[in-house]
Image (cartoon, rainbow, N blue to C red; front, side, top):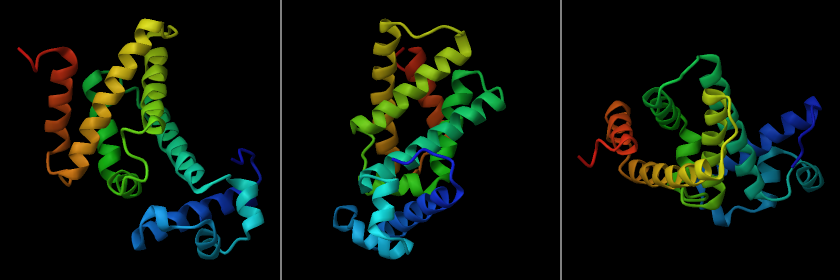
Amino acid sequence: MYTGTNKTALKSQKRIVDALFQLMDEENYNDITIKNICKRASISRQRFYFLFESKEEIIIYYLNKFFEEIEQDIDYNNINSLHDIIEYYFKLLYDNKTLRQIIIRESISPYSPIFTKYIVDFLSKMHIIKTNKQATDEDMYAFYFTATGLNGIVLQWMHNNTDMPVEKLTNTIEAILTGKFFQ
């Protein structure tokens, strides 16, 4: 995946991402070809393969950008409490039609290792930001446990058309994570 700073390459990456998601509105992810993406983005296959190795890498690129934005916003807005972090995450999911499309169409399920890795990395970074300490092995077990639980909740929420309000969902997750839900 291209990670440089060339403006033309970055614009082409954006066109490729946009083309993939436009095509996903029209057909099944598994039926979309690199040729279709290149045609929609008006770029050559050679250019595509200079920027991405596969269509899965387009999704990974998009997820990278999404989670970078979350981390920056949480840090910039000094969001500290567990409640506020969870609520912010679900508000962004609710507002992000493209990411919801990825999840609903299950091109990348929240149960996939890719999505779980992003949540674990996010939790690890939040741990460092909030505690100024590196995560221990024990912390990593907790992050994986939490990530798979959150991913299951995301999937259930998306399949129910996000009918539970974000605030209620946040309160439920917070109650689960703090042990109050089971009392």
